[in-house]
Image 1 (cartoon, one colour):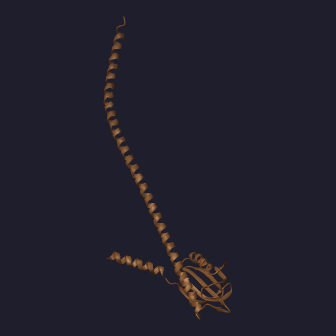
Image 2: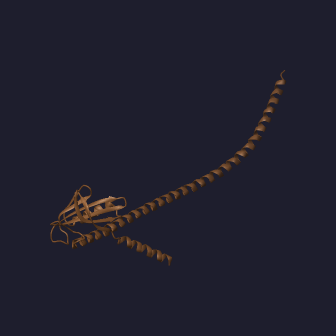
Image 3: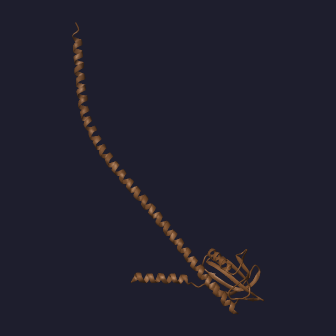
Length: 225
């Protein structure tokens, strides 16, 4: 029962991550020294993921122009909620706890997509859908990273285990050699001890024989006429 509950909790957490909502609000922001009306999306997704995905997203509306300061524009953009070409101006800023994406859609005739017209809801929907995409990509990236770390760790543990088995095998082989050498050493020691007793007896016999020969030699010399 507890296992099923934990599984359900993990599934709910996973689903909550997939469908997480971005913080999107209407703002006015200076972009390249020009004040523009638009929407600001704040997300915890890494700026590198947001930037790469946003450039692909903008390319759906026309040719993307890149400027300094994380500014991306699409002139004469074709958007689904307008029959006329529009000017898209956006800016991506990396923050310590995530990323902000400012999006301004200039409809022309001094009119912007904003909270005061229907265009604003369309822009909000674009940002919401985009956030779902990058949030998913972020989770996939994190999952891939976690999988790689787990895979690398598993490989490292396997390598250590294999090395340990080799060392254990070598140690056992060395132990067998040492026991065999010890047996040979004990046999050699026993033989040396036996040889020592035998040689001590031979030395004593040789000494006695030498003394007898000395006495015999003196006896022969004493019989000189």
